[in-house]
Length: 363
Image (cartoon, rainbow, N blue to C red):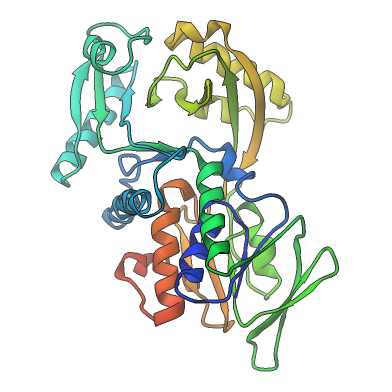
């Protein structure tokens, strides 16, 4: 079985299949974990996933799957369950935030209200937030070092007998007379005979789907992420501040993202990545003045893999035997649980109710 795309979702699928005894080949056009996985905010949560109760429940399961994974393969270097802080600076935005907090509490999700003064005293001494600001702390949330997690999962999969092919994109997927997947043709000229394929190609998923005649609608949602280098990170956990998201990244590095900056990317006079990085850094310095002396290491714009209706597309496509999808935004939160559930389906034929609303054939 081939898994196309070795970001966090593909790596989780591949590892779960390999440890169940499936012969797996992991295929990536680049290097594992160095695409969108390495350039996302990498925030493990369900507090931002309240569009439907089913989607919330799936993300809660994703959080639990991360904890299980850390216990199984070890948390070193990739798993950081330090909680998450969020606040707003406009009346309407604050009201929405606290309405969501009330909903989450009714759904059994842990939410702890505090003040700006409490947040500095208990969590983040470097914050420049007014003492009386209303802040929410989500103690069960985490951040993940995506590239390191992918590296661990790939190593574990290889130890279970998987094969890794990098630097070659999938050029074609051949099917037999009955329509079943039978081989992959790669851009390096190789042909891989396979019985099945998992499309976990992230931003390239629509193109890969098209190789079997499948139209997978995807949204155009570019995002800019900046990494700062500093002698020591002045922040300890992921935070959604009013205008910029900030989290540590290990080894004296800090990651920045902002929806406000993302909105500039699609404009006809869009700024270059370097200018977007400067904007992100300026927003971050207002909240954490200690970042004033940090250096922008790199800014990158990536395209988030978001299916057309905003929800995951996971499972088999009945019209193409042997073709499966694992395409989603929030791959960091959902990767471990989707990897387990899809492997259960492939190996044992079990279709988990958590995925009932996210089957590929809804498109």
